[in-house]
Image (cartoon, rainbow, N blue to C red; front, side):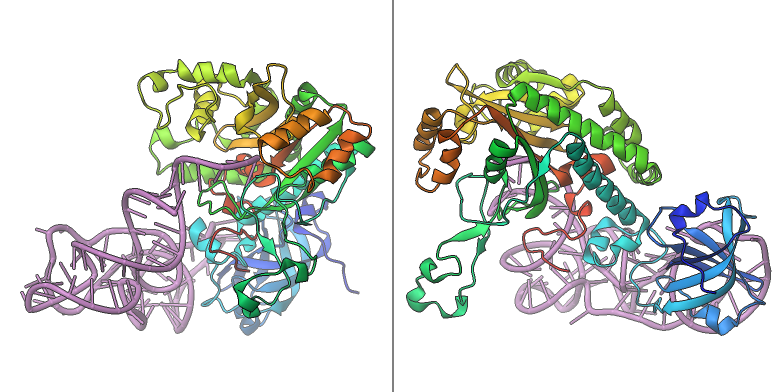
Length: 478
RNA sequence: GCCUUCUUAGCUCAGCUGGUUAGAGCAGUAGACUGUUAAUCUAUUGGUCCUAGGUUCGAAUCCUAGAGAAGGCGCCA
C-alpha cells in the first residue's frame, strides 16, 4: 500500500514509531560504513529532517547516487533521534531516487554562499535555508495583508497593469506596445496604429483606479505589481515591486494614519506568531554576519526584538513643520554633518534626514504629515493654510519610507486648480474627476511597499533578496 | 544618472613597494574512518588572475578604456 506523503513541517505533530513517507531535496549527505545520514528538506520548514540509512539494508551503488540537490522519496519509521541536534529522525526502510543531481555541477553547496553569488543563481536559491525562510515569510506577509483587510470588510480590487494614464508623476514608465519596432516607417511611431490606439504603459500605482472603487464600495485595496523605469541603483529600489494600496471613503488623515499603523503591527505580529523558526534562523544569520562589522554598523538589537518593539510602540506623529524644526536645530545640521543642510522650509527631506528623525531623535517609527504642497502630488488634499497638503509618510528604521499616502482632494474646484498648477491635462483625467462631480466624499489611502516591509521584517539589507525574481536596471533573468 | 570600492580555481578568499613555476579552505576525485550534524583524516584534479589596449627587460600587481558587481546619493515604495 502506498503511503501518502507527510510534509516535514508537520512531523512535529506525528507520534513516534509511525510509518511515514517524505519527499524532498537533499541538503547534505554524510556517508559512512554502517549508516549514512541525509538531511532532507521539502520547503515546509527551516528544520530539515535527518534520514538514517542502514547500509546493510540498501545497495551502496544506490546510496551513492543520492547527492546534494537530488530529490528523493523516503519511507520508514519516525523514531527518537540518537543525535543531539534533532528530537526525531527517519529510520528509512525504502527510498526512491526521484531526480539525480550532479553534485560537481550543482551550484548550491552545503556551505555559506554570498548573497551576491546566490543572486546569480536566483533560479536555485530557494533551495537554501535563507531564501526558503524569506519566501515563507513573504507568503505569510501577503496572506496576513489579505486577512487584515478581509476581516475589516475591505474589497480587493484588481487595478489594471496596463494603463494609459501617466499623470501621477511617480516616475519613469515602461512603454507597452505591440508595434513591430524593427520596422518603424520614417522613424516616427504612430501610436494610433498600436494595439490600444494610444500610448500605454505599465502601471506605477493603482491608486487612481482604487479611488474609483472606494467611492462605490467604501473600503477597497489593491495589491499588485507596480513598475518604475527609473534608473535607480540602490538596495531599496526595484523596477518591479509589489504594492498594497488601500483606499477608503469617509476616512480623513487621522483615520488613514491609524489604519497604516494598525496594518503594520498586524502583519508583524502575524509573522512573529506564524514564522518564528524562520525569523530565528534569519536572526542568527544576521548576528553571524555582523560579527565581521564594527560595532557602529551592527544593529543595536537582534531581529525579533526589533520586530517586537514595533508592536508595543506608538508611532510618533508629527507635522512636516515640526520635523523640519527638529532637523534645523539638530546637532548634525548645526555642525554641517548633513550632506543637505536643513535650512529652508519647503525642502524635501533626504534619506539622511529621515534616518535622523527615526533612528536618532525619536528611536521609533515616525509618521510625518502636512508636507509643503509644492513637493507632493496633485491629488493630495490642500490644507486650510493653503501651503501644505494632507500627506503622510511612514518612516521606518533602516528602510526609510515604507508607506506614502494622503487624504485625497475631494473638492472638484480645488483639484482642478491643482492640476492646472501642475500642468496636468483635465481631459485625460476626466474619468477621475467624475468621482468628484458625482457624490464626492472625504477619502484617504496609502501605498505600502511590500519589499520594503519585507526588508524590515527579515533584516535583509538588499531589496533584491526579499523578492524571488528581482528586476533591476540591466537585470531581467529567470 | 552621479560618487567610491571591488572583479584571482565551481564557491569564499590570500597574493607586500612590479621579479622566476599564482596559493589556502570548502566543493570535486581516490582512499581511510566513523551515530554523523556545513562530520573527520590522508592524497589529489582544477586558473583566459573580468575584457581590450598600453607602460616595462618583466604585469594578477602600474596606466587608459570597456563590462559586471557591491556600498552610498538622487528619484521613490
